[in-house]
Image 1 (cartoon, rainbow, N blue to C red):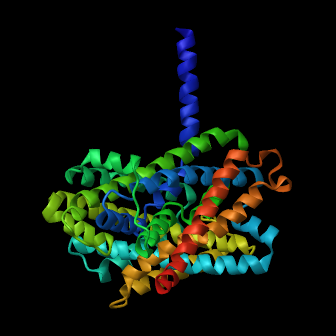
Image 2 (image 1 turned 90 degrees about the vertical axis):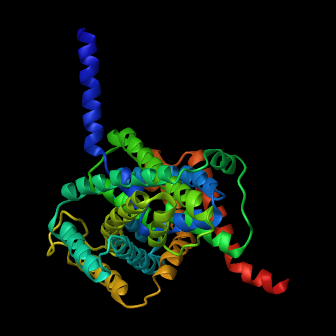
Image 3 (image 1 turned 90 degrees about the horizontal axis):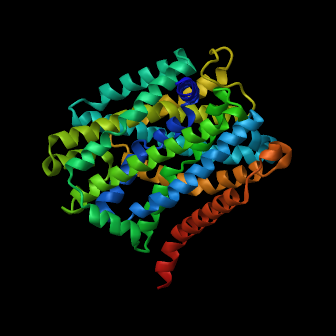
Length: 419
């Protein structure tokens, strides 16, 4: 009896400790399913049916390995990824890398506000009302709140993304066909399908995630004694990312693809589900898009402000006041204003911004991964905590595949001309 009490007490203590450090992995993974991601997965399901579901499996493996590297680097060095890149690659290289990432992230944040606008239009609310209100609330949360408050709200948002499971079940998918598409993957070799695969990988393993993950581990003050709990947090977050992505693709494949309905954005998917799977499926899909968009409209510019300030040696952090980190808050506010402003421009090319921001992510990702792998294998930086051979194999394999796909995408028009 006494032993049982001791075991129970030990378990509760470990559980409480895990819950205390819970956050960075789950939040980073959940934000990955943002408006751009939902749009990409929706279009993938509507256009290719179940055929591209297999891409989520290698994406999951690479995502876990990469996020683990980030957490380990953050815990061991106490420095953000951007800070380490600047110290080891120099200011010039850092400048060009981060200009590209900044442009991509403004496009990504614009996509989040497009998601806010589109999801609220399903419920009859104009974007000229929804976007200004949401952008103001997001700004207040970050500028006036604390890391602890923001993290708790983000975790609630993460759970809300599971609403896509409901939309999928209401769409009555063909599970046998789904299983066959995973066991026997198929892919057409053309520019559109390649761009879609790069887009799926680029939104599942986005460059900004690596910077945010490492910064949030530091912000939370984790140490190597917390490593195994942090690893669980990462795996849970990655599972959540891929599960939500899977259900979005399946929801659109089992309804829109089967009925030959083409879409350009996530809002179209929500609207098209109404006559096929019912009003509830449509509203649940739109609600999931709204939650994901607010969630990511908060995190994306926050992550961008974090890593740009780290890269150039400025103070950064939610728990710092405006006068302690003015560059951080000015950059965060500027990204919000620019992104929300683009959405309010009549006839802005939102679909192109959404899809191509994900493709840019996929093209920029190898650059970030190469920097990461070189840093995490540097014994002067990591000491005994450098990568194991399996981590390096998966990391470098991901770099080679992404560079290969990106090169093939760029060469595809030339190949067509030569035929």
